[in-house]
Length: 362
Ligand code: PMP
Image 1 (tube, rainbow, N blue to C red):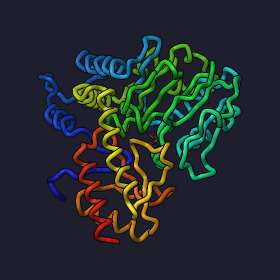
Image 2: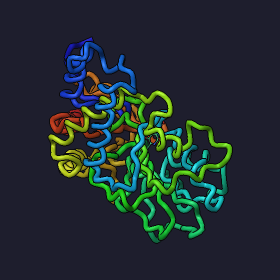
Image 3: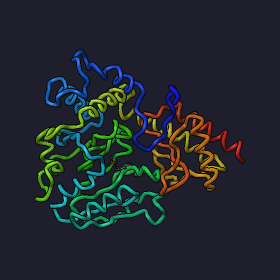
Image 4: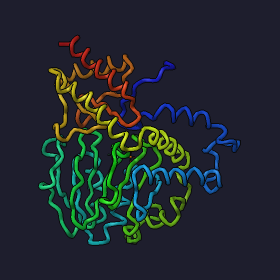
């Protein structure tokens, strides 16, 4: 094993900012003169509560979250939200609308179908999820309890460029793979949820932003740990929260704020993705997997059209210090995940490597 850090293009868990890892390292045995690690603190002690409350406050500020929304730090990953959402929201009318634009929104749909009548408002499955349906293509039911979509499709490399207009139907959005990459008008949503392991923290904390009036209508079978009202009442501490992950999230937010918050990050991520998409557009060897208008700024999917050449690319890239570039088996080819913590330099060097690889192999 080398002592050098690599450019890790993993889809998640993925890179964390180096200054965050260094700070966490420097505080790992003795946080702020307390004589203990954050990992060892009581979640109800005053030292930990200060970390927890500051993290929540920073999160509210960074995403400009209105006061009528609660921020929850939960466990179970985004996948648990696939069940928690219907358990809490389905009671309004017994039915819900789902847009299926990839693997995870399909999983969300399948899970929710256990708790009510779920309708497919749109699906991009006809073209292997290479595009995002337009507003006009959404078959929305005004009687739906909620409308669910996934803002960024991690596996396919597509991203919604608009927030659907659903009238009075609350929007529930899985933002696991693009949260904190750009400003979001939270007031357009009923619930936003995201697993941490792409843009926020190590896997283990799931952030939920919920308009408070949507809680308290859970189905009678709802387990206590999956009840938003319970979690709001206990300020995410009905039981022991993922305390250390929340602390790391706080460090990531400090780092993000130093870079200009989500407004600053939006400029950086647009620049980074353009560098790679320019390579694809100029290349005769590499082709982007997603339609241009739907391209994700977080997950860049591409292929050569020749599986052996794809494998050679991934193998040579790995040797050159660009790791985890193999695409998901549902898409094949390559995927470069360029979340917030991927430095500009990593993307520039990968672009150079791709051009060199093409020159040497054509
Ligand atoms: N939604 C999206 C968009 C994802 O990318 C992922 C994980 N890659 C999930 C949901 C599932 O998240 P988790 O593993 O945290 O349950």
